[in-house]
Length: 208
Image (cartoon, rainbow, N blue to C red; front, side):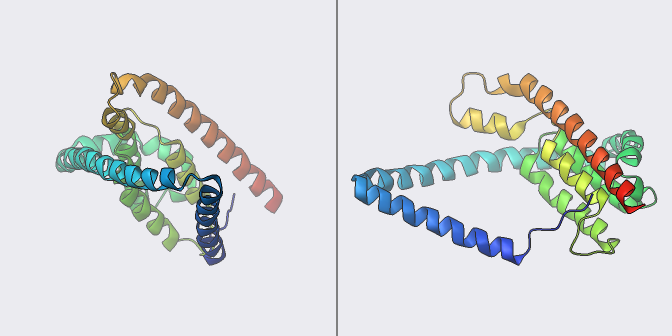
């Protein structure tokens, strides 16, 4: 199953759409006499963004530190070994690419631990490694597509980002989303992997 990357044309389109939305919003605010509300919302949202960023910074630093400690122990190696068979099933093209599988393992482990944005650099590193063996540089491979699906599903045991957001908004029970997140991410991962495997097989059948 191959999908083209978002090229320069797509980026240019997005760069045009967002300014248009902003301009239309200001014009509508002027017409309806709500420009004061727009100004107030700008200041309030910027203040909220700073507060949220500081909250995220503390959470990400904490879990990055834990991940760094885990890397110095045998925990990550044991988790990587536990993921070896599932990875061979999900990424049969990478059976002999140990570096890619190791990087994918670290990314999956980071997502499972709920590191969120802190897992992104690990994912980019894995994609870069897989891209080296990609014969069509402008098209993702089956393994890359599967990896994107897994990251989108983002199976999590500890949804630290969501908990941090709820805590910053003064939730009385910020950890109350853990069970629903488990159910949602597990079902999303199963559905995503199943659909991706089916589409890959259909694509292979067409090429025969």
